[in-house]
Length: 174
Image 1 (tube, rainbow, N blue to C red):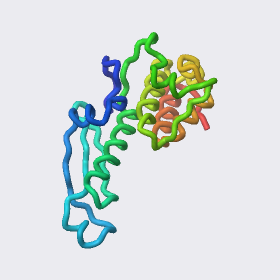
Image 2 (image 1 turned 180 degrees about the horizontal axis):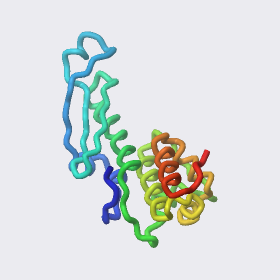
Image 3 (image 1 turned 60 degrees about the horizontal axis):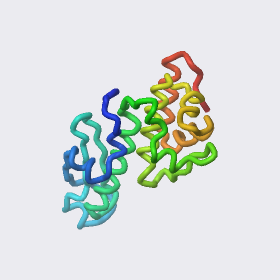
Image 4 (image 1 turned 45 degrees about the vertical axis):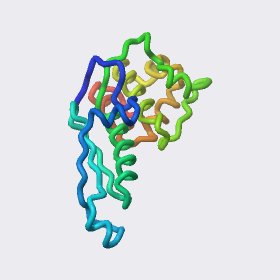
């Protein structure tokens, strides 16, 4: 699993065009609902972030361009969960985080384009703080419960937090 990179900009925080430039794309045929047209056309899209090998796929829509957008969002979320960057403490919280955090509350819908970047920042800061959620929350100017709530919006992120905590001898969060 890719772990650390000294770049300050997490790939999940890149704009869609910037991320697509450093990814490869495969079009594949998948079976499923959609009828005769879908089964004859390569509408499924698989995106691979080249430097990490992390992939995401979308095939539930009949339109290749819609599947590309869904795959790109899924790739950004997978990068946020699986890939860590080292952030300098003076760059925390980011401008994006500050714009989404008010009075200790983090406000973002899990389907919003900002969600993967915020998730990546939360996990990067948690890694900096040895996965101690209260210390990370303090660094991010939010409450511990808001930080945990953000991670619970993406099940794999919350599972990653608990795996890292257990590996360090800390109790799991509920």
